Image (cartoon, rainbow, N blue to C red; front, side):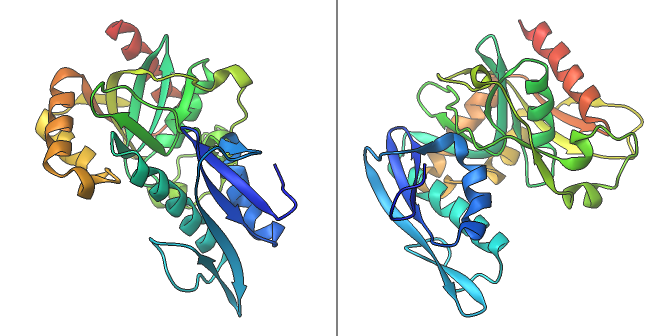
Length: 276
């Protein structure tokens, strides 16, 4: 995917954002995170983002969301990630973009929605290890007309502790600070078409719970939580509120508190079977 001018193309729905850098160490984590979305040749280029080493830090030329100097490669990675997503959000007003993960079985998906560190990646990774199809572990676009989920396959990753299935129960803060490891999936494990949404789950890692618990929550509470995790709410406003409110009225919606990612995934699999 490397080009002579050090450009890399991130593609979604046949549209691309170019990333340019002459520093392979800085850009390597970004390319890893977006490797399933990389293409060799752009079809419809939306713009170019350039990483520039600027004194003791870095800046991203062409950025709209983040301006100024980033002090670390990690800061540059976060800046690039949200800039790329923002470009796709801008040109796809038919989609509602959520901070969520999703996996499906038999073309019926469970969407796991929540803030950073809540357990989305853990749940998605463990479901995919059980043979489910991967859509995303961090960003999920939804068609506002059909309610179908669209694949946005950022490289699946899990916290190192969960990936190794340690018996020790860490605090929520400790888990949130663990490094992530790539979950390697077979080529056929990535969704290639839109998926129907069967249930919505809000995961919450809690080392103090005595057992994994899946609890139904009200449509009103679910709508508020989805709105908190909507990336383009400002574009849709009342339409987003109406769409999400209608969505949670039709679907089962749960809070998932867990202290063991494998057992939590097994509980979700059992619930999925009951939903048919």
